[in-house]
Length: 135
Image (cartoon, rainbow, N blue to C red; front, side):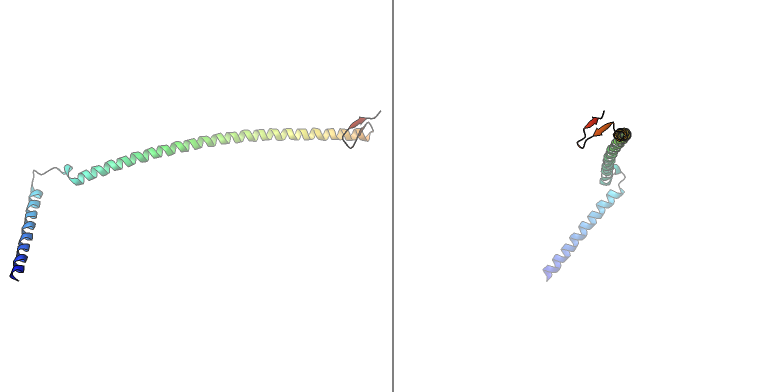
């Protein structure tokens, strides 16, 4: 049992001596006016690293924003082109509709003329569509 007590006392003395040495070194470093500058500390380096990462991320975000703005401008330009095409197609459709209406009116006039000529006995139209002039 004496050996165990001696070992315990030795372990406690070693732990205390290492702790005191650590406190002494830490206190000396803390109160040393000629110590290293704060800019060389690991926290400063981490802060600079974070700032550079943040700046890089911001630059990347800006580039992405510019790309998206360019895409939006492209889509707006395409939309304008499509609207212009639609207007052209609407005009063409109106012209075609007008032409169809004119053709229908002419067809009605021709049909009325043919009917009048048939009723007066001037022409005869057969069932197969042939027209004969009566004399």
